[in-house]
Length: 305
Image 1 (cartoon, helix red, strand yellow):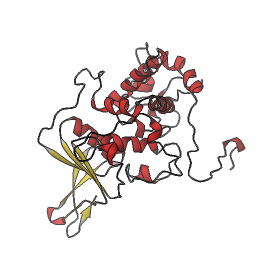
Image 2: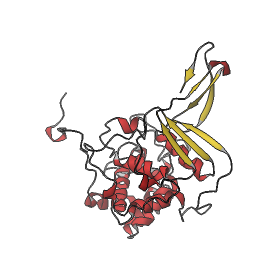
Image 3: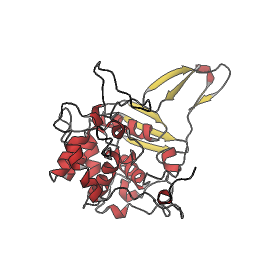
Image 4: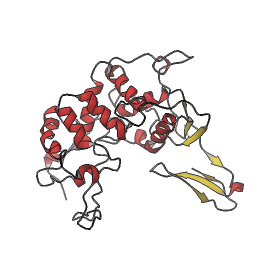
Protein backbone atom coordinates (compact mmCIF):
# COMPACT_ATOMS: atom_id res chain seq x y z
CA UNK A 1 0.00 0.00 0.00
CA UNK A 2 1.40 3.37 -1.07
CA UNK A 3 0.01 6.73 -0.02
CA UNK A 4 -0.52 9.70 -2.31
CA UNK A 5 2.53 11.64 -3.49
CA UNK A 6 1.39 14.86 -1.82
CA UNK A 7 1.65 13.08 1.54
CA UNK A 8 5.29 12.16 0.94
CA UNK A 9 7.85 14.13 2.95
CA UNK A 10 11.47 13.94 1.85
CA UNK A 11 13.83 14.32 4.80
CA UNK A 12 17.16 16.07 4.34
CA UNK A 13 18.98 16.22 7.65
CA UNK A 14 17.18 16.79 10.94
CA UNK A 15 15.39 20.06 10.35
CA UNK A 16 11.77 20.50 11.42
CA UNK A 17 9.58 19.10 8.64
CA UNK A 18 6.25 20.06 10.20
CA UNK A 19 5.71 23.80 9.79
CA UNK A 20 2.47 23.61 11.82
CA UNK A 21 -0.55 25.74 11.00
CA UNK A 22 -0.35 29.19 9.45
CA UNK A 23 -1.98 32.17 11.21
CA UNK A 24 -4.73 32.05 8.58
CA UNK A 25 -5.45 28.39 9.35
CA UNK A 26 -5.56 29.14 13.07
CA UNK A 27 -7.96 32.05 12.58
CA UNK A 28 -10.23 29.86 10.48
CA UNK A 29 -10.82 27.67 13.53
CA UNK A 30 -11.95 30.50 15.80
CA UNK A 31 -15.58 30.47 14.72
CA UNK A 32 -15.92 26.70 15.07
CA UNK A 33 -14.25 26.64 18.49
CA UNK A 34 -16.08 29.67 19.86
CA UNK A 35 -19.47 28.20 18.92
CA UNK A 36 -19.00 25.73 21.76
CA UNK A 37 -18.09 28.38 24.34
CA UNK A 38 -21.71 29.22 25.18
CA UNK A 39 -22.85 25.59 25.07
CA UNK A 40 -23.69 23.76 28.28
CA UNK A 41 -21.35 20.93 27.27
CA UNK A 42 -17.99 21.46 25.58
CA UNK A 43 -17.11 18.07 24.07
CA UNK A 44 -13.51 18.94 23.15
CA UNK A 45 -12.80 19.78 26.78
CA UNK A 46 -15.18 17.65 28.83
CA UNK A 47 -15.81 14.79 26.40
CA UNK A 48 -19.01 13.33 25.02
CA UNK A 49 -21.43 11.29 27.10
CA UNK A 50 -24.42 9.12 26.31
CA UNK A 51 -27.92 9.62 27.66
CA UNK A 52 -27.10 7.29 30.53
CA UNK A 53 -24.16 9.49 31.55
CA UNK A 54 -21.42 7.11 30.38
CA UNK A 55 -18.47 8.23 28.26
CA UNK A 56 -19.33 7.93 24.57
CA UNK A 57 -17.33 5.66 22.27
CA UNK A 58 -16.70 6.37 18.58
CA UNK A 59 -16.82 3.89 15.68
CA UNK A 60 -13.23 2.82 16.33
CA UNK A 61 -13.97 1.94 19.96
CA UNK A 62 -12.10 4.96 21.34
CA UNK A 63 -13.58 6.67 24.38
CA UNK A 64 -14.37 10.35 23.80
CA UNK A 65 -13.28 11.58 27.22
CA UNK A 66 -12.11 15.01 26.08
CA UNK A 67 -9.01 16.83 27.29
CA UNK A 68 -7.32 14.87 30.12
CA UNK A 69 -6.05 18.15 31.57
CA UNK A 70 -9.46 19.86 31.41
CA UNK A 71 -7.78 22.59 29.38
CA UNK A 72 -10.10 25.50 28.66
CA UNK A 73 -9.92 25.20 24.89
CA UNK A 74 -12.91 27.21 23.71
CA UNK A 75 -12.24 29.95 26.24
CA UNK A 76 -8.68 30.16 24.90
CA UNK A 77 -10.03 30.68 21.39
CA UNK A 78 -12.49 33.30 22.62
CA UNK A 79 -9.76 35.36 24.29
CA UNK A 80 -7.57 35.19 21.21
CA UNK A 81 -10.46 36.27 19.01
CA UNK A 82 -11.08 39.21 21.35
CA UNK A 83 -7.49 40.37 20.79
CA UNK A 84 -5.94 39.19 24.07
CA UNK A 85 -3.13 36.77 23.07
CA UNK A 86 -1.33 36.93 26.42
CA UNK A 87 -4.57 36.20 28.22
CA UNK A 88 -5.09 33.16 25.98
CA UNK A 89 -1.64 31.85 26.92
CA UNK A 90 -2.34 32.50 30.62
CA UNK A 91 -5.54 30.50 30.34
CA UNK A 92 -3.66 27.57 28.79
CA UNK A 93 -0.95 27.76 31.45
CA UNK A 94 -3.62 27.58 34.14
CA UNK A 95 -4.32 23.88 33.45
CA UNK A 96 -1.26 22.97 31.37
CA UNK A 97 1.73 25.06 32.52
CA UNK A 98 4.17 22.81 30.66
CA UNK A 99 2.21 23.32 27.42
CA UNK A 100 5.32 23.66 25.18
CA UNK A 101 6.05 19.99 25.90
CA UNK A 102 2.61 18.79 24.76
CA UNK A 103 3.38 19.57 21.16
CA UNK A 104 1.35 19.45 18.00
CA UNK A 105 -0.19 15.99 17.37
CA UNK A 106 1.35 14.47 20.50
CA UNK A 107 -1.99 14.69 22.30
CA UNK A 108 -5.22 14.81 20.28
CA UNK A 109 -7.88 13.65 22.74
CA UNK A 110 -9.70 16.95 22.30
CA UNK A 111 -9.82 16.50 18.52
CA UNK A 112 -11.35 13.04 18.88
CA UNK A 113 -14.15 14.45 21.05
CA UNK A 114 -14.82 17.49 18.87
CA UNK A 115 -18.41 17.60 17.61
CA UNK A 116 -17.36 19.02 14.23
CA UNK A 117 -15.90 15.78 12.87
CA UNK A 118 -17.65 16.04 9.48
CA UNK A 119 -16.65 19.67 8.99
CA UNK A 120 -13.13 18.97 10.23
CA UNK A 121 -12.26 18.56 13.88
CA UNK A 122 -10.74 21.55 15.59
CA UNK A 123 -6.94 21.46 15.46
CA UNK A 124 -6.65 22.59 19.07
CA UNK A 125 -3.11 21.27 19.79
CA UNK A 126 -1.81 22.78 16.55
CA UNK A 127 -3.46 26.08 17.38
CA UNK A 128 -1.96 26.02 20.88
CA UNK A 129 1.52 25.43 19.41
CA UNK A 130 1.08 28.24 16.93
CA UNK A 131 -0.16 30.51 19.72
CA UNK A 132 2.91 29.68 21.80
CA UNK A 133 5.12 30.57 18.82
CA UNK A 134 3.40 33.91 18.42
CA UNK A 135 3.67 34.74 22.12
CA UNK A 136 7.34 33.78 22.26
CA UNK A 137 7.96 36.01 19.25
CA UNK A 138 6.80 39.02 21.27
CA UNK A 139 9.44 41.10 23.03
CA UNK A 140 10.21 39.36 26.33
CA UNK A 141 7.96 36.46 25.28
CA UNK A 142 10.22 33.92 27.04
CA UNK A 143 9.98 35.90 30.27
CA UNK A 144 6.19 36.24 29.96
CA UNK A 145 5.80 32.47 29.71
CA UNK A 146 8.19 31.87 32.61
CA UNK A 147 6.25 34.34 34.76
CA UNK A 148 2.95 32.59 34.02
CA UNK A 149 4.37 29.29 35.33
CA UNK A 150 5.18 30.97 38.68
CA UNK A 151 2.45 33.61 38.94
CA UNK A 152 -0.82 33.33 37.04
CA UNK A 153 -3.47 35.96 37.85
CA UNK A 154 -6.19 33.68 36.44
CA UNK A 155 -5.55 31.18 39.22
CA UNK A 156 -8.08 32.58 41.67
CA UNK A 157 -7.36 30.11 44.48
CA UNK A 158 -3.63 30.81 44.57
CA UNK A 159 -1.96 32.80 41.79
CA UNK A 160 1.58 32.48 43.17
CA UNK A 161 3.99 29.70 44.19
CA UNK A 162 4.30 28.85 47.88
CA UNK A 163 7.55 29.49 49.82
CA UNK A 164 9.86 26.64 50.79
CA UNK A 165 8.19 24.39 53.39
CA UNK A 166 11.32 22.55 54.55
CA UNK A 167 10.48 19.26 52.82
CA UNK A 168 12.56 17.79 49.99
CA UNK A 169 11.51 15.42 47.21
CA UNK A 170 13.57 13.34 44.78
CA UNK A 171 12.12 13.03 41.26
CA UNK A 172 13.59 10.15 39.26
CA UNK A 173 13.53 10.77 35.53
CA UNK A 174 13.13 14.13 33.79
CA UNK A 175 10.86 13.12 30.96
CA UNK A 176 7.45 14.76 30.42
CA UNK A 177 6.05 13.16 33.59
CA UNK A 178 9.13 13.99 35.67
CA UNK A 179 9.58 17.64 34.79
CA UNK A 180 5.84 18.30 35.10
CA UNK A 181 5.81 16.72 38.56
CA UNK A 182 8.88 18.76 39.53
CA UNK A 183 7.15 21.96 38.44
CA UNK A 184 4.06 21.30 40.55
CA UNK A 185 6.12 20.26 43.59
CA UNK A 186 8.21 23.44 43.47
CA UNK A 187 5.06 25.54 43.22
CA UNK A 188 3.72 23.73 46.30
CA UNK A 189 6.79 24.76 48.30
CA UNK A 190 8.87 21.57 48.17
CA UNK A 191 12.59 21.47 47.53
CA UNK A 192 13.07 19.23 44.49
CA UNK A 193 16.07 17.36 43.12
CA UNK A 194 15.54 15.83 39.69
CA UNK A 195 17.87 13.14 38.32
CA UNK A 196 18.00 11.47 34.94
CA UNK A 197 20.11 8.71 33.42
CA UNK A 198 20.92 10.86 30.39
CA UNK A 199 23.58 13.53 30.57
CA UNK A 200 21.90 16.93 30.80
CA UNK A 201 23.88 19.63 29.06
CA UNK A 202 24.17 22.80 31.15
CA UNK A 203 22.58 26.00 29.91
CA UNK A 204 24.55 29.26 29.73
CA UNK A 205 25.21 30.47 33.27
CA UNK A 206 24.06 34.00 32.51
CA UNK A 207 20.62 32.73 31.47
CA UNK A 208 20.06 30.57 34.55
CA UNK A 209 21.79 32.78 37.11
CA UNK A 210 25.06 31.56 38.64
CA UNK A 211 26.72 32.46 41.91
CA UNK A 212 23.61 34.07 43.31
CA UNK A 213 23.32 36.52 40.42
CA UNK A 214 19.88 36.93 38.83
CA UNK A 215 19.41 35.35 35.39
CA UNK A 216 19.78 37.57 32.36
CA UNK A 217 16.34 38.21 30.86
CA UNK A 218 15.80 37.01 27.31
CA UNK A 219 14.26 39.67 25.12
CA UNK A 220 13.99 37.74 21.85
CA UNK A 221 13.10 34.07 21.34
CA UNK A 222 15.80 33.98 18.64
CA UNK A 223 18.45 34.13 21.39
CA UNK A 224 17.39 30.64 22.52
CA UNK A 225 15.99 29.15 19.32
CA UNK A 226 18.29 26.97 17.19
CA UNK A 227 17.58 25.07 13.96
CA UNK A 228 17.16 21.41 14.84
CA UNK A 229 20.05 20.28 12.65
CA UNK A 230 22.33 22.66 14.59
CA UNK A 231 20.84 22.21 18.06
CA UNK A 232 22.88 20.18 20.58
CA UNK A 233 20.94 17.39 22.29
CA UNK A 234 20.50 18.61 25.85
CA UNK A 235 19.38 15.33 27.43
CA UNK A 236 16.43 17.12 29.04
CA UNK A 237 12.98 15.69 28.35
CA UNK A 238 13.79 11.97 28.47
CA UNK A 239 13.01 10.06 25.31
CA UNK A 240 11.11 13.06 24.00
CA UNK A 241 14.41 14.93 23.78
CA UNK A 242 16.42 12.09 22.24
CA UNK A 243 14.08 10.71 19.61
CA UNK A 244 13.51 12.62 16.39
CA UNK A 245 9.81 13.22 16.93
CA UNK A 246 8.64 14.95 13.76
CA UNK A 247 5.79 17.11 15.12
CA UNK A 248 7.68 18.46 18.16
CA UNK A 249 10.06 21.37 17.86
CA UNK A 250 12.79 20.42 20.36
CA UNK A 251 13.41 24.11 21.06
CA UNK A 252 10.28 23.94 23.21
CA UNK A 253 12.19 21.50 25.44
CA UNK A 254 14.97 24.08 25.71
CA UNK A 255 12.35 26.59 26.84
CA UNK A 256 11.09 24.21 29.53
CA UNK A 257 14.65 23.39 30.57
CA UNK A 258 15.47 27.08 30.94
CA UNK A 259 12.25 27.84 32.81
CA UNK A 260 12.80 25.07 35.36
CA UNK A 261 16.56 25.66 35.72
CA UNK A 262 15.80 29.17 36.95
CA UNK A 263 13.69 27.93 39.87
CA UNK A 264 15.48 28.31 43.21
CA UNK A 265 13.85 25.25 44.74
CA UNK A 266 14.83 22.87 41.92
CA UNK A 267 18.14 21.26 40.99
CA UNK A 268 18.56 18.87 38.06
CA UNK A 269 21.39 16.40 37.59
CA UNK A 270 22.08 14.18 34.59
CA UNK A 271 24.05 10.96 34.28
CA UNK A 272 22.55 9.61 37.53
CA UNK A 273 20.79 6.25 37.75
CA UNK A 274 18.51 5.45 40.67
CA UNK A 275 19.17 2.09 42.34
CA UNK A 276 17.96 0.55 45.60
CA UNK A 277 19.21 -2.66 47.16
CA UNK A 278 16.87 -5.63 47.09
CA UNK A 279 17.14 -5.95 50.87
CA UNK A 280 14.41 -3.33 51.05
CA UNK A 281 12.25 -5.76 49.01
CA UNK A 282 10.42 -2.77 47.58
CA UNK A 283 11.00 -0.50 44.63
CA UNK A 284 9.51 2.82 43.65
CA UNK A 285 8.02 3.21 40.19
CA UNK A 286 6.82 6.43 38.62
CA UNK A 287 4.06 5.91 36.09
CA UNK A 288 3.37 8.09 33.09
CA UNK A 289 0.57 9.87 34.95
CA UNK A 290 3.10 11.12 37.55
CA UNK A 291 1.51 9.01 40.29
CA UNK A 292 3.72 6.93 42.58
CA UNK A 293 3.25 3.41 43.82
CA UNK A 294 5.36 0.74 45.54
CA UNK A 295 5.80 -2.74 44.11
CA UNK A 296 7.51 -5.77 45.71
CA UNK A 297 10.95 -6.41 44.25
CA UNK A 298 12.04 -9.97 43.41
CA UNK A 299 14.05 -11.54 46.23
CA UNK A 300 17.80 -11.76 45.67
CA UNK A 301 17.81 -9.29 42.77
CA UNK A 302 18.74 -5.65 42.43
CA UNK A 303 16.09 -3.38 40.99
CA UNK A 304 16.27 0.04 39.43
CA UNK A 305 13.97 2.52 37.78
